[in-house]
Structure formats: C-alpha cells, structure tokens
Length: 341
Ligand code: NAD
Ligand code: WQD
Image 1 (cartoon, helix red, strand yellow):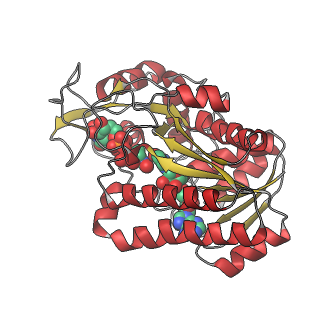
Image 2 (image 1 turned 45 degrees about the vertical axis):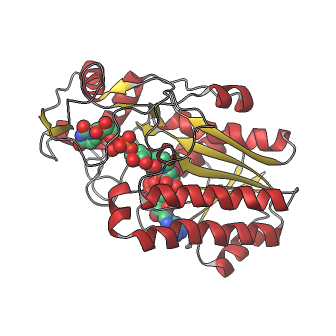
Image 3 (image 1 turned 90 degrees about the vertical axis):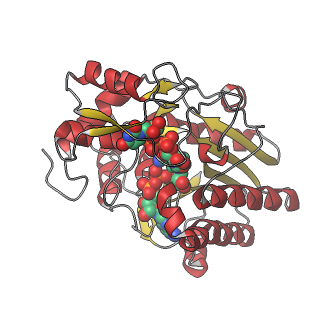
C-alpha cells in the first residue's frame, strides 16, 4: 500500500515513516519544512536502506497535493502536518486556524477528488482540557482551552462529517498524550526550530548545559508530590500505533474510530527527572518555579480502546524513553543542522 505522510520530516512523522517502511508500506512524504529539516528523512532512508520520495509541498497547496497523490497512487494518508505550540497559538490564532484547519480541509478535498479511502489523523490530548475523571476516556466531553486545541477539535469534526457523507472514506483519529524519546539508533529525534517548550527536550538540554537549569513549573498541584502528572509515551510506540491504525482501516467497514495513544499511567515531573537520572547516570540541574499559566494538574489516558480496536499496546518503558532521548541529544546537540558527535 502506498501511504502519503504529511509533515513527514517532523518529530512524529519521521519515526512513523521509519515504522511504515519497516512494516513493508511504500511511503511518500510531503512537508513544507516550517518546523523540520530534510535531514530527518535522509536518515530514515539510511536506517531502513530504502529510498523514498519527499516533496517540499504545503498541504494547503491543493494543486500540488493532487499531483503528489495522483503520481504515487496514494491509498492512505497519515496527516501530521500542523503547527503545534499551545502558547504560540494564543499569539497567532489565525495562523493556527489557517494552517491546521485550512490544511486539513484541502487534504480532505483532495482525498475525496482522488477517491483515497483511508486517513489517519494526528489529534491531541489537548482536546480534552480539564477533566475531573482520570484516566481520560475518548467519550469525555471535549474542552480545549487554546486556539491550537480548538483547531484539532474542528479538524476532528470535519473528518467525521466527511466520513458520514461518504461511506467509501474512513478514518482513525489518534489523540496522542505526551510523546517522548527518540529512535534507539540516536539518528532521529525531536528537533524543533527554536527553543523547545515541552518537558523532556528542555530536561535533556538542561542536562547537557545548552539550556539553563530546568524549572519545575509548580510543586503545589493537588498531586502526590505536588508536580504535574502526565502520560509520557515513547515516540516509537506512537509510530507503531500508526501502523496498527492503517491495519485497522483495512479491516474495518466505514466510519471514524477515535483512540487515545498514551502509556496509560501518570508520571510526575519529579518522577520523570528521577527516572532520567537513574536511566542515564546524568544529573539534571533544576529548581522549582511558578506554575505555567493554564497548566493542568493531571492528564493521563485510558488506552483500553486502542488495545481492543487497534490491537496496540505501548511496549517501551520510561527508562528506555529517557535513555533514547539522551542518546539523541548527546549525538546531535544541535539537532539535524549541526555536526554529529
Ligand atoms: P513537528 O512540528 O515536528 O512536525 C510537524 C511537521 O509538519 C513539520 O515537519 C512541519 O514542517 C510540517 N508542517 C507544518 N505545517 C505544514 C503545512 N502547512 N504543509 C506541510 N507541512 C507542514 O510536530 P510533531 O510533534 O511531529 O507533531 C505531529 C502532529 O502531531 C501535529 O499535528 C501535532 O499537532 C500532533 N501532536 C503532537 C504532539 C507532540 O507532543 N509532539 C502531541 C499531540 C499531537
Ligand atoms: C509536561 C509537564 C509541565 C516544561 C503539551 C501540549 C499538548 C501536547 C503535549 C501537542 C507539565 C511540566 C514543562 C518545563 C515543567 N502537544 N514542565 N517545566 O503541557 O502536557 O502538553 O504538549 O498536542 O497539547 O499542551 O506537555 O511537555 O509542556 O509539560 O515542569 O520547563 O512538565 O508543567 O506538568 P503538556 P509539556
């Protein structure tokens, strides 16, 4: 099967391209490189020994996307391409709607015109917002609290409407919790443009000395050790979830299946720091600071549905995620653009 991966050069896209190639899929990637580098997929080709096509293309460019789909006989799409910073989305809400909602709309229209039957969509735990009941089930009422989160809810709605209108089109919506880590080779990993805002890349850079000491964003949450609880899941498990989603699409009749992808257990900021230090033997300079505005005390996933419907389970431990993140950081202190150590 020929699979189009949008945003293929990014963090989750590159790891998923690798998993797809290893599972025997043909891969075609598109990316406008606004938050990534071509080098990630060059390394995926090296790791798998399989060359594949990357088009420098914006998903909002319907004409170019049509050509890519047509020329490559695309049968399924995995749609990662989006802007993903919660804080930036408050500053540039229209850019987020244009890119995330506009890009998904164009893609859905191209898929309809070209009769591409299967879509896997990157959604996020951020669609849930604050929830009293933890772990969070897919049936929870959606309460996104940022423009970014609202773009994801809007995209989910568009996909559901498209599937209701067309029985030959079906989709799996994956709501990722907190993807972390890197491929075990240390050749691909998380390399955002500019300063990262997520915990693990900030932690590894603080440990390497390329960022100031890590600030624990609040230790007065109503949690066992006072720091925030999240659901960190290895990026290679997330990548494998996409292979499982494609397999499910081929098995299922029509409609939309929405699944959480997480490890299914809560880990606090302090626990993550301890695990990292134990797994790598490297100490993390850190201090406690104020809470980040709008931060949740706790959010973790009920992954029963992904287990049952996709036959997927997270296989990698938090120790492995920390070791792999550190391996990536140590070998590539400047991401993809600098020298490899
Ligand atoms: P990323 O920024 O590393 O990857 C996104 C890729 O899409 C980048 O390569 C970027 O250049 C590309 N892109 C953005 N807009 C584009 C456009 N209009 N046309 C073509 N390419 C475009 O981010 P990621 O962490 O790999 O996230 C992938 C997806 O997963 C996103 O949709 C994100 O919202 C979602 N997600 C990520 C996380 C996370 O913590 N990483 C959590 C939940 C959901
Ligand atoms: C994790 C924990 C912080 C940085 C975000 C998005 C969400 C999804 C995943 C895309 C929290 C604490 C963090 C730091 C800290 N992405 N922290 N010091 O907030 O769960 O979710 O990324 O869809 O949409 O909102 O992830 O990695 O930013 O924070 O103490 O320097 O680490 O308070 O408890 P979060 P995160």
